[in-house]
Amino acid sequence: MKSEQQQMIAEIENEVRYTRDMTGMDRLDPRVMGAMRDVPRDMFVPAAMRAAAFDNGPLPIGHGQTISQPYIVALMTALLQIEPDHHVLEIGTGSGYQTAILSRLAAEVYTVEIVAELADGASQRFDELGYDNIKARIGNGYHGWSDHAPYEGIIVTAAAPHIPMSLLDQLKSGGRMVVPVGQPHGHQELMLVEKNRQGEPGIRSVLGVAFVPLVDR
Ligand code: SAH
Image (cartoon, rainbow, N blue to C red; front, side, top):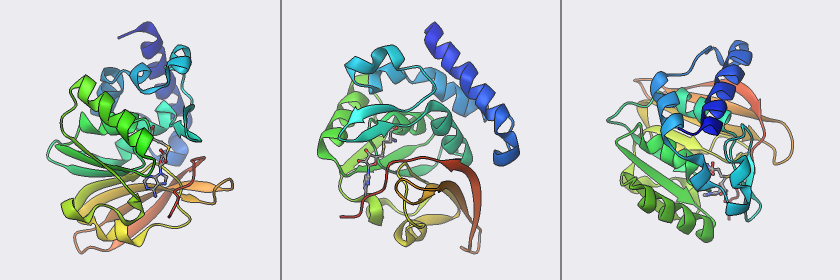
């Protein structure tokens, strides 16, 4: 691991401790931190941004979109409590970085991206890195990906005005969904939805966040 990546890991751990009163976690699952060590974030940012690839902040990836902050990626992944036999749905592939992290922990990751150029770029990276348990699709992820439902985990990496019902329908009983909810440039909260064995959802707000909007067209 490069020293910049080591520094990124240390900064994530610091921010986790700093936010523990809100998130209820003072350390993240070591498996999640292992994936953050394994996946080369510099492969997921545009060439012009390489020098900042291991900064603990979001970066522009073109088309008005961003690769999420490493701390947020780690936190959202940890909240899903992924097991090796899980099938996970991601909405908003973007650079594919979050997808790659998920793929190190789950059996299969299904990811949907609405901007074709971003989806193509991400798929190329998955091939180059040999991450072969990812299925990617171009389309509007607002309605999920029913072909492979239900999922033990669902992650939305763009902010929705409310929790999308079709995604909730595609979540397995006992499953978890993380989704930023709020207005495009206003107040947003990262929500954790847990569906109990009876299929009833429980919702808790984890943290204030800032995501690009989930578009519905
Ligand atoms: N996880 C990504 C985050 C990218 S930003 C990363 O770390 O790189 C959010 C992404 O969601 C953008 O690429 C945007 O194009 C995509 N997006 C927005 N609305 C969408 C929708 N309805 N369906 C699928 N993708 C969507």
